[in-house]
Length: 154
Image 1 (cartoon, one colour):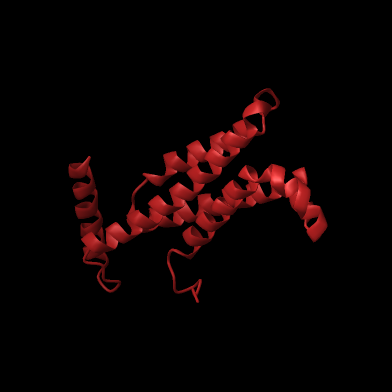
Image 2: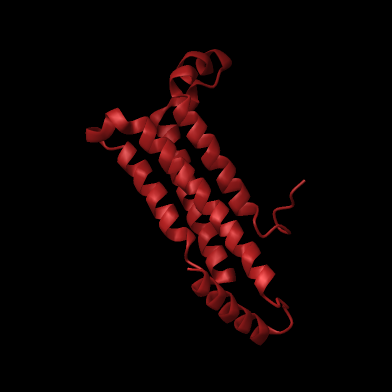
């Protein structure tokens, strides 16, 4: 079992899981329209429930990426999150209703990828850093080393 307080990637794992669930929900919408009401889960097809879920997912992703940025100092996951959120917003626009499913699924997968990238940056930071909580200057040097290594890769 994952312990939320001891796992620094808990929010990313939760957010990625919820984003994949959202992508599946959007992709399987025609099938779900038939079966969810019979299972007593018809409320999941409600536009207001979807909006609440999207706002929660966006907030969770933003907080998770901010927490990650404070830790590893990298911003690489933010553009991916912005693209995912932009695609989801575009899927809700009236003029793009014929592309709603593809935009929403792509946006949800973009958010899931941003969580995955944030977890990767966290792991990479700890692989390249001499990370000791008792010596803050070494963490700062490690961030510089990490940023230099990332710049060299690009």
